[in-house]
Each structure stands twice: as C-alpha cells, then as structure tokens.
Image 1 (cartoon, rainbow, N blue to C red):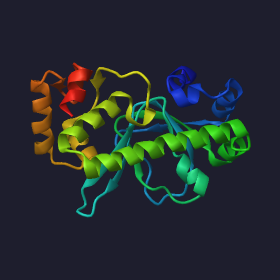
Image 2 (cartoon, rainbow, N blue to C red; image 1 turned 90 degrees about the vertical axis):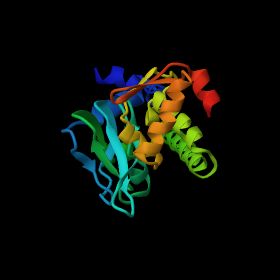
Image 3 (cartoon, helix red, strand yellow; image 1 turned 45 degrees about the vertical axis):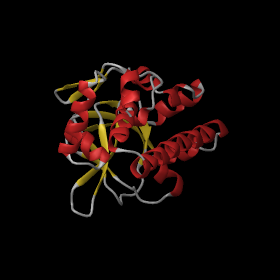
Image 4 (cartoon, helix red, strand yellow; image 1 turned 45 degrees about the horizontal axis):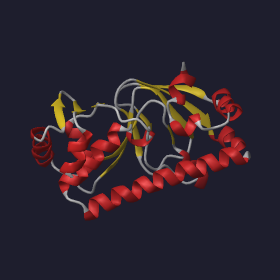
Length: 222
C-alpha cells in the first residue's frame, strides 16, 4: 500500500496521522515510463511529489552538453517543495530511470496544508536537511579527495540518497556510469577508485549495483 511505502521515509513518518491522511486524500496518481520526464528545468511548479515505485534522477546539463546527475529519488521520498514555496520555475530536470509510480499533491492542496503550523515546520525541517546535504556535497567537491568523495557518495546512496533513511542498506542499485555522473568524474577514474575499494574488502562491484561489504573498511578508505 502507498502508506506503507511512504512510512519508510523518516520525514513522512514523523508527521501527525491526520496530516499524513490529508496528504494522501489530496494526492493524485502519476505514472511514468522509463525515460519519461516528470518536469523540466524552467517548468512551472506543479505540486509536491512522492515516489511509490521505481526511481527518478534529478539532473541538469553541463556546459559541454553532458548530463550531470545531482541525485536519485527512490520510493518513499517526497520532493519538489522548493518551487512550491518560492513560486519560481523548477531548477532541474526529473526523469524516470525505469517505469515509476508517483503521487502528486497539487499546489493548492500543498498551500492549504502549509496553513497548518505542524506541516509548515515539517517542510522547513525537510528544507534544512536538504540544505545540509547540499553544503556537504559542495564541501566534498572543493575540499576532499576523489576517494573520499566516492566513499561519501556511496554511504549517502546506501541511505537512499534523497530519502536519508536511518538504516544503511548493503546493496546500492546504481551503475558506474550514473555514479560517475553524480560525482562529476570520468568513468575511468571512478572504475579505478572502485577497484581499489574492492581490493580493500570494502565493497563488491556487481552488475549495475555496488554491494557494501564493510562500512568500517569503507570509511577508513576515505
């Protein structure tokens, strides 16, 4: 059931039951095919979204025309609140990685809920969490070694990336190509770093996935 999937997200689970019910009552289903875009950079805000099945990538195009993946949105995650708050266009593209099912809470319903202090505080907390994540990623890009950046992104993905789950999962469903695009490095550079982490017994490189074998070894490698 949608509620069970959404309750796996700590942010949604912490909301009062009546607020969660109001969100579900006001939400509408959305289905996307693989490669179909939910919205493009510059689009008007359409609503607050939640992924029920599948996953989406949040991306933008670099100056050289190549895609830069900023994050992966997995089941249970609510997203799209920034444009609803400032009424400005979408800042990035959101594209289905595979066949996906979502809920959309229209902007009218979102703003009606924002009249409730408990929901407004929750949205502020959600924004604060994502702002912290953004600063951490900026710090990684400017101050940390490539090895440290790879390790920290793997640990972030192990918690569902944007979902920020408390539990770390042992299998990360990400391809090397996508991970390289998230980090802004070449596939060759990433492959070298992953092989070294594998040699240390920290990870195992699978087909379109990376398995975490030792969190301690992975952190020590950074």
